[in-house]
Image (cartoon, rainbow over all chains, first blue to last red; front, side, top):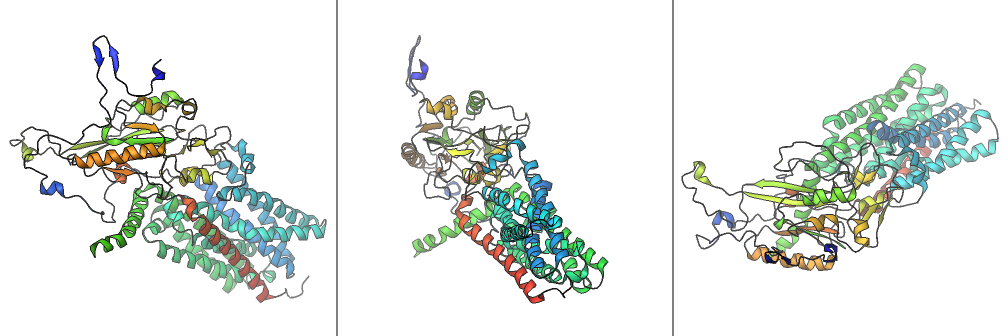
Length: 355
Length: 272
């Protein structure tokens, strides 16, 4: 019966009617008589728009729930997706310009990388057996949904390109698969930036304009590195150029990102994220420079440069991953930018009322 | 339908936490001693759908006086202390980032305007977790799926109020149609301001805020961050057009740069 009356009626008991429950009009803060006939000065002072600095938090606990993703799986997924996607574009270019060894090597590396990245993604699921639910819907608002569909189209194309090249079967179909993989490759390499940016994680979301460019550069450098590592020197001249272009884009976009984002970019310079980013910069510069200067003369130098480029790209992705996690774990990066936004929004009206 | 949580009458009894756990069969989530006042729950997560925050401050509430003469006590006997308590919960945002980014369609909006996870579909990708601007949804250890408050979807579907609101002894947690709750909340803030509680303010009530207004909003007595709430949360997908645009631009730069490099180098030296 009690479920019948959802309200707060008074109740009839043996002691008589138990008066109404203390209602929502509880006179909290009313207190006793005001001894000084009013509010005391220091208490009457109410904080106006607070300074945009970090003053209070709930016991220093994070406001966000940080990502539960495993770094090896998801940063590895970012990195391998870049190697695969940019590699498919390079492979098509190499094939069209008569560099069959590079084309074949990069088709194989793209297949291996996309298989590895898909395995990493599945391994990271809380329920790996339900992986196919990723293809249950198609949602433009979810970069992970779009990415799943992208992988579903790109994976078979990259696989066919590699298998048909190695076996020499159906050359026309192989050409179509190579072209298809090359068309989807650039998005495979960059959509992971959208995936990271489309979260509340400050160090990812607030750099959503620059992060895709960092990923594009990093992917180009990594796939170029794979070619330098695996292929004879006589065919890799364009890859030495793209390595320099990729590394330059990666570094320039990263610097621009750190400059633009201000406080939120701090994790890209500090802690684990900062160390990975720094290592990525050094390795990318070393690999691109080494490849450009010596990669055309010495096979060993080319291989070493290629390895450095791959390692540099991996470090950049791990750096981005850890910087994001760091920014989610410190309430400062959530609260201060939001406070500044509120203060900036309040400023014009404050000026108006002052006039 | 939604919640209005009036923290000015919360007494920190945690009946909401218990009722929620009992009704929804939410598992135990660690028995820690934190030293954070009376809060050993710490925050919302997969196994905590209601969380009562306790904040001790050197500040009186409104004109409240203890009425005791502390003149002789050390430190002038000042007892300007207030104890803020607030029951936090999933905000059931009008523009819900968790729902937007869910790649499986496991998260959906109900006929009550609330946001619920379908546990037979969730594959534990974890994308909703960093997408939530409030730090509400989380992954359950050993289960792998994401869990959060359902606003007692089963109860409200049967015309009952959610377990937490039902159990709340002071009606700090109120359940009902949002427009009614907003009206009541505005009156309550006015009343508190008249009583000298100038700190009273609403949080999450404005349909024009960054998440389109919360399905669970609050009356707070201090800044939101004091309670562990973000001061100006914005749904991440508001920037999605810009995110996709810049991603497409980066992909085009990648394609263009590589094409240009091959064009500059031309065909290989005829060694085929």
